[in-house]
Length: 126
Image (cartoon, rainbow, N blue to C red; front, side):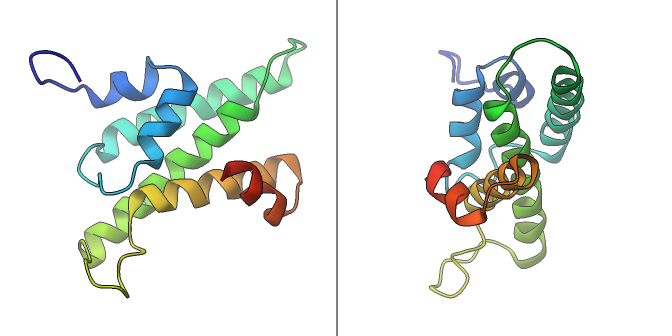
């Protein structure tokens, strides 16, 4: 956030470093912070560049891009569920939160790509 109270969604996802972007995506209770356009753009950008980097002979880390890609698609699924069911404040519907779905998406993508068990991946993401 800047001094004139503006916030560019795409810049927050694409320009910030991966750790800060993952922190933005994991934040709970912020279902209006990112829209579909910025999330889908960042997902396409990171997925294509991660595939290109993984196929090259360059020694680079892929842990953060894997977590970031999974968090992006998990957040998109969480936003879809919020648009279908609305924001729930009772005990039974409180699990419908895009930040929670971002954490689940990051764990699922990381475990699928790295072929780790889901329990070990959940411990690593936590």
